[in-house]
Image (cartoon, rainbow, N blue to C red; front, side):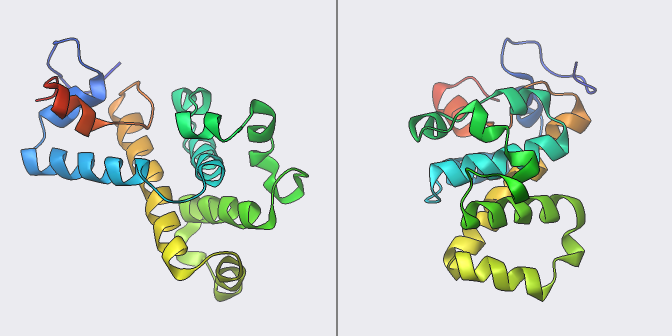
Length: 170
């Protein structure tokens, strides 16, 4: 249940919360969400880091929701069950393990991501991929915590841009 007063108009709580924000903030959230949804990262990798952030954020809805791209890429519940114990997971690649570790470190203690870890990250990803991965992880951290702290019960897939184009936001 939302911790703030929201319009009662049948929209998702998160859309209603954004509709009471300043329009430029809601537009920025929608743009960021759309950019992450259009990420060029491998859909499997994207889903694995999204899942690790959901685990850390303790977002029960996000934990049970799967992105359509991940499902199409063959991400299974069995694979996602390995995310929490990524370091010893047999079905994850080296790049996936370092990306999940990055999501974990970023979520829990970003000030202490050291050069040794970054050397492993740069061995697996290009600079452009690292920037994109960082922004993807940051989106899930921020949006998940935004919804959690405000008591908004929808998944981290805000899709505000779709709501705006459908005329149901604001």
